[in-house]
Image 1 (spheres, rainbow, N blue to C red):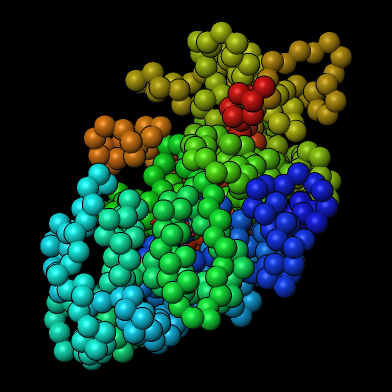
Image 2: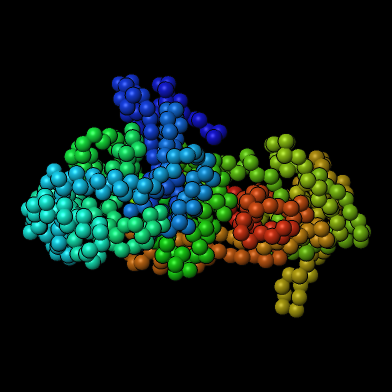
Length: 562
Ligand code: ATP
Ligand code: MG
């Protein structure tokens, strides 16, 4: 990791979680240990919101010389899959974090969770309930009305023990019984109204196979898993604040288990996207995107394929900070962080996206003059690249106008423009087809204009170009935001109605400078005057790269900040 930015042991400004932990360390709480965990449920791919949680959990541990576990909260086999387990691990590693050998699964604890449930029953703190799901919902009450006790609430301990053992043994149908905590059906906190601890579900589990036909509920499992791992600080998002009393209840009722301190922070929300795994899965299942790794998706796999760097995501999470109030972050800030990193790290190259043929008539046939351009304007260590100036070249259609709009600084009929790193050319003639479409330009070049600007010569603009014979044909995919609405989630109507129909534009036959033929999967470039691009890691073939637009050059967010 290259970004040990904060020094929490010092008095440097820090977020509220770091302040709490520093205080705990001062008071010798947890014998000076700091152990956090990142607890995904393997029911989807990770998204940028998870990146915030990963950076907070792994980052906080690192800052205090502690450790962070990876734990899969795998209590719902119906929705989970090994495909998700694998992708989650890959994404965390890619982001730059390491859980070493501390890879755990809540399902590792199923035996202990069962024993703890028996302990609760013996203490008359849990009971087997025969209410159906629908009845239970009715008995539960509402936010304004208290619930009612289940008719089974006073079952004897012996009977509960017997029924629970038989639930485990597979004697009952799915849904016939649940095990519930005996807390308080009148509690203003709905989570405390005798929540279900176990349900009967005959499902194959990706870790435990067919060993179990009863599965523990998420809340019950989560707090005990944290305790069994001796987590010191259980960092989670704000929506779990209302679950904390239940976690406290469970851990206090059980003998001899640790009691991690839960601290809640605000979720990350970003405009122009959706971030719930359910919706992301729906986009994939309904083929509205090409997969979880579609470059338009806010998943870490999608962002990686798009060309995001791990550092840009970590820096963004750092910029967002850790707070207690939910808000929506401008996607422009994420893109700003990305540009900031790419500007420093991406070699420059030229690629003409919409080629327009230009014949330079005073260059003889077969003439070739090698131009040397730096690979980076500031970073000399990146070296140089060679491009041949020849009679026929390509420039971008957008860089020529017959009727230029005001302020147009590129090539016009009879006008001059500089070719990047090369000569000034002048447009002598515009050649059109029968329909009046521009076919090619006939130009001349001024031999005296190479290198430093000659005295008294004013050229309005600089455009990019490639030699016709030596350029390579590439496919370029231009991406825009997946949603055209700022808040697709909360807008009226279905979020899918706001998918931007122009979020993907495929350009074939783009002309790239020859050095790009060797671009390898995930290699990033700045295509001069166009934006940052990344060789697609799936569809690029050797000597045949396909480029994804990562992000354009214009930073509107930074400008807004003043
Ligand atoms: P979703 O609501 O998208 O299904 P989730 O919270 O159910 O996500 P988990 O796999 O349970 O997904 O998440 C793992 C961890 O990541 C949790 O601690 C969760 O709080 C955190 N997390 C999920 N989404 C965000 C977010 N948008 N911002 C910050 N942390 C998040
Ligand atoms: Mg969750």
